[in-house]
Length: 228
Image 1 (cartoon, helix red, strand yellow):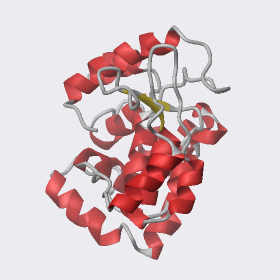
Image 2 (tube, helix red, strand yellow; image 1 turned 180 degrees about the vertical axis):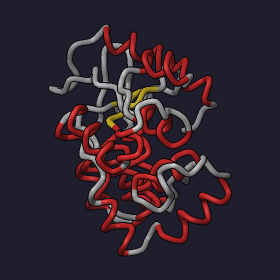
Image 3 (cartoon, helix red, strand yellow; image 1 turned 45 degrees about the vertical axis):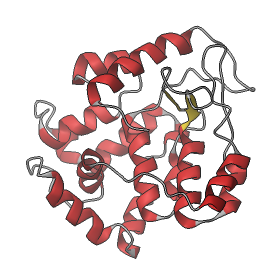
Image 4 (cartoon, one colour; image 1 turned 30 degrees about the vertical axis):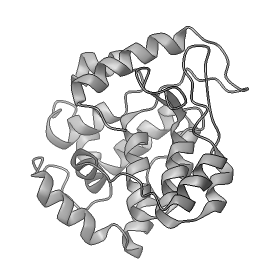
């Protein structure tokens, strides 16, 4: 499901208010909003045809669409990631780890193992990755110089597609920050991968700004600082 960036921002802020109104969800705490980098992991895992990055997503990180059809208004990002990779690889075993999440105000019951298997059986394909995702992930993996200006989306797509399913890409991706260890450790690990951004705190444009924004979990703070 895709919305425009402005619509996504408003939806995310609305969701943060909705999530704050609830305290439990099938034994999980649904109030941890996803970071944009965790969302990027989902797209990259889909393109890699590998669930490795799904397991680096916080198990309680959620993505929410309160205006969506009942059943897909909220989801655990890790489950959605595994669902996408299961579709991309036609591997129903991954569906066992696709679990629903719901709150008193948002229904995510349709994101589940049975529906995952049904989508595989129907031959459905997952959505593709978007250009902004490629830019940051290529920087974190060292395929683009840290200080290089943000490039054209089409050029990044070619570069990403050239490497995405290579053993070298998988090796580098294994070193990406792990959000299961907590946001602070993930943030520290991210800046270790881009020391130019870590060591030049006044350089907050281009790739450094992309990284800063991708590590903000709170949607309202991110909108205030980054505009999305």
